[in-house]
Picture 1 (cartoon, helix red, strand yellow):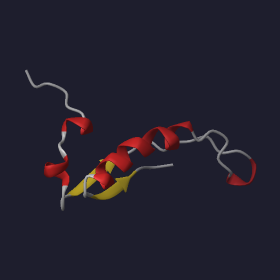
Picture 2 (cartoon, helix red, strand yellow; picture 1 turned 180 degrees about the vertical axis):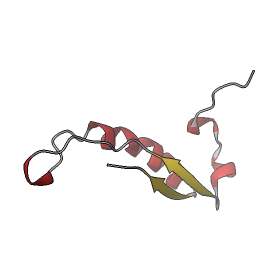
Picture 3 (cartoon, rainbow, N blue to C red; picture 1 turned 120 degrees about the vertical axis):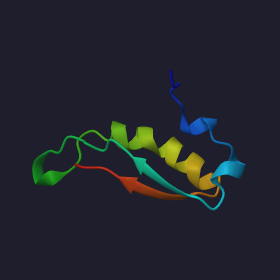
Picture 4 (cartoon, rainbow, N blue to C red; picture 1 turned 60 degrees about the vertical axis):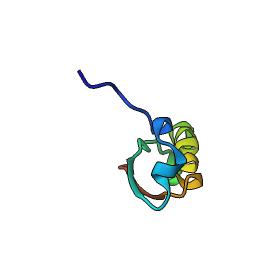
Length: 65
């Protein structure tokens, strides 16, 4: 059976110069004037994005609102 991996399992040497396609859940609630009322999901994705970028990866984000 396959084990579930994590982005943190990737070493910097493995990330350097690579393109990483990252699907993030940015489905956030919108209020009046289509302003974000809760940015928790956006904030939660930042450490992963930073980790990949700091490792030298080119990060491509995909999501839906």
